[in-house]
Amino acid sequence: MIFSAVESRRLYRQVADQMRSLIESGELAEGSRLPAERELAQMLGVSRPTVREALIVLEVEGFIDIRMGSGIYVNPRKRIGLDVPPDDFEGPFELLRARAVVECAVAEEAARLAQPDHVAALDANLAAMAAALEDRREALALDRGFHVIVSSIIANATLNRFIGDIHDMRMTPYFEKLASYFENGDTWRAAMEEHRAIRDAIAAHDPAAARAAMRAHLDQSQIRLSKSFEEETVDSSIPAAWRRAGGG
Amino acid sequence: MIFSAVESRRLYRQVADQMRSLIESGELAEGSRLPAERELAQMLGVSRPTVREALIVLEVEGFIDIRMGSGIYVNPRKRIGLDVPPDDFEGPFELLRARAVVECAVAEEAARLAQPDHVAALDANLAAMAAALEDRREALALDRGFHVIVSSIIANATLNRFIGDIHDMRMTPYFEKLASYFENGDTWRAAMEEHRAIRDAIAAHDPAAARAAMRAHLDQSQIRLSKSFEEETVDSSIPAAWRRAGGG
DNA sequence: GTGGCCAAGTGGTCATACCAATATACGTGT
DNA sequence: ACACGTATATTGGTATGACCACTTGGCCAC
Image (cartoon, rainbow over all chains, first blue to last red; front, side, top):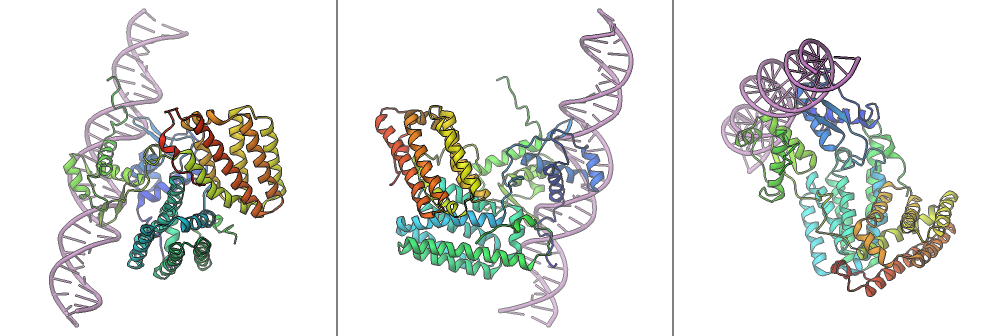
């Protein structure tokens, strides 16, 4: 394959990922003590500062507890999930299904309540997207922004938070890596056109059309995602579990 | 004071705390670039490894973005605060509206996918509820359980988590106090009957009926909640803001 | 004007040394 | 024999300096 790990070049990240896997898989029992930093450095073939940086990552994420002068201990598994919920990990297909359920209903309601300034916000978002089709980071942020704006029309903090959280999951390293496979200027352009259809339905105060447009957008997103899996089925870096489900 | 900073003796933590404050207070604008690591080290009077460790903390926490060869940039402010949501506090009416949007769609989909064991789980929940109408804690837990079971029929972890989280909010002190005003054996009995209607519609694989039944249940819940406000309008412990909105 | 090349700047990694806090072993006193 | 305190080994914390890899932007050739 042409693409290599885009971001994981940073060594301390690789070390952190490796250790996190060991903890998540249970190979490192809860409460057990890890080897000393100097030993870990030798075992992993890296320098001690690199090991330290990796350990700090895991400490901030809550996986381990570093005690000065004593050692490094594996924390008991509690609710850690900031961006790494180990057990009930949610894959992209699952996310899209959840979005289909929630955001279709949201779009329907938004079409009823939309005010002119809401439509103006959507237009501004579309204009910005048109200028950022080739910038992955910017496009992703604007995509999130569009859906958050639609949600904000309902003016319900609970729904806003949920939809914001869902999109924040796409910013995690796992999804970033996955996204690098199938996101490009063309896919963003298609997504933008689907956004425009949603905007038009909302501006026309047509609930049924808004729901349909949102549904179409998320269906197309799933199709784009599926295609990327078909093209890259050999890549073992994508967890096989992600490919299950998806429904239709 | 007796307690001193027990933990912050670690220098890189102090540095991280200091920088985090600057970002949160807005003194470091979003998107702006920080000085180079070497300069920061000199400015703060610490070594470069210490600065790096502090920066890694902030990166994992999501405050900054470190780009190799380019620099360190302040991330746009997203939802970072997990335990301090005083601003966009969500009242019970807002919660019910969010539930109406999401759970109606969920019930509709659940009616399509329900299996016999799902219906059996709902029946077991109803039977337990019938025996716990006078036990507030137990009834509340069973109510949560019913809605989680309905959600679980769709087998989508994201939705399950969202609905579970929403119901968990009702366990907070604010809601507990509020609930004590209007929850009693009669209200729980009414809720149980509405649950039964939802169960019947799901068992009959009737999506439209399931949606309607869920809608009716949440509408009735809102009416029960409103009634409690009418009766207790003198109680200042209930934030006035909660009374706004609610729709219908 | 355009394109490619190169060099300055920046984060990433390494090696080593020493300091500070903790844990353990040992020896002394009771 | 037991309790306590000190000495020492172990381990994390910080510092210094060097070099590598990547990004960026300007310069130069075309």
